[in-house]
Length: 456
Ligand SMILES: Cc1ncc(COP(=O)(O)O)c(C=O)c1O
Image 1 (cartoon, rainbow, N blue to C red):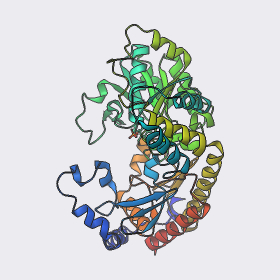
Image 2: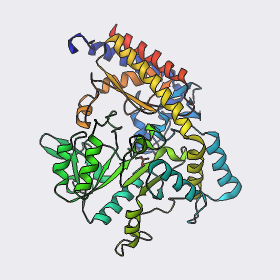
Image 3: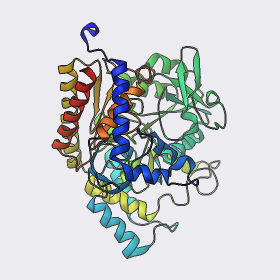
Image 4: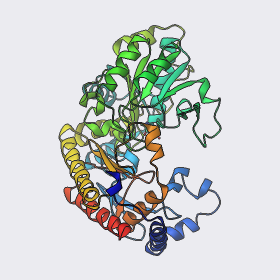
């Protein structure tokens, strides 16, 4: 089959990238000037070093954002499929969150007081309705939700290690920067200032490999498997039939807790993959989108685990035992979560978002089919991503091997130069409640044109 697939001419690709880079510099002079005038006081010239990932040599500076639209400081409007890499999955500044945040901050007053507000119980009950976990604690980031869950898991099991999947991403959680290779596990390339070699803290296996997981869990030193039910940070890697059932069975058999990180897989539906696929994790973590862009995260656990941790005399979860954060669970964050979950990322909103993502995916697939491009697209609810290999990868390792930074750059620049913003790290697109079918079609048209230029 692959013999008849279209071949990419690398010289042509290089020439197209040069053309798009030049166009980018011409199209966005105000952003270029702002970046060049940044001065020397920002590390890497940006507020947060990930912002250097945008193709083109300088990031766009944005002026306004609303729903699925964003405008830059040159006045261009973009269809935003990046949505803050999921932080804005509710859309930018949705009206309900705007009202709740301004009521809390401007009318009632106080963002953070170390005292509870009544929003917390509502949000926790709603998270239970959606994800099943019975008791919840709040954080300000998904990273911190994962750190909290890992701490509790180690305390509950009295085991030192965790297990993750090769090329996973769970935020800046030290334990997770590890990959599986033919010669055994090793720290992920570029791992900055690791406190210890991650092989001391972590076991790592490839996704969709139940035998490897069984081998690693049989050491009986793994407190928890931390997983996205589908990998979303190395392309989208879906679980094969029976795989998640095997993970659950193996973790139970070996006394290991199972943590579902739903931060990105929330795109699968109102209760993420956990509800959509009937999963039964011991803990759920989530962050990014649930506050409508206001910092928010949460971890939830079963009643049985909650009772055990509360009753553990060796676990100080109230003071300096290593869980919590001064601003975590603050009133502003909870007001934003209540509005986001109650009025924006509703069950009905997901129906629309998933329908738009289905149209987006079908559009890209039709371009791949008609041009015989050796790429694939995978959808996970309201999210879709294309990857440069003929078949969807089965594991993080397979997906990493299909990475093509030149194609990434070409497509990112092609889109951004024509008013479409994709997630800068890879070619991921996310739909929010304000994303329209026409937005998906606009992407398809540009994707087809980009493909045709590449193949001409
Ligand atoms: C699955 C997953 N978990 C956790 C995180 C961490 O989120 P944050 O950077 O907001 O802490 C990310 C970030 O991309 C993620 O993709």
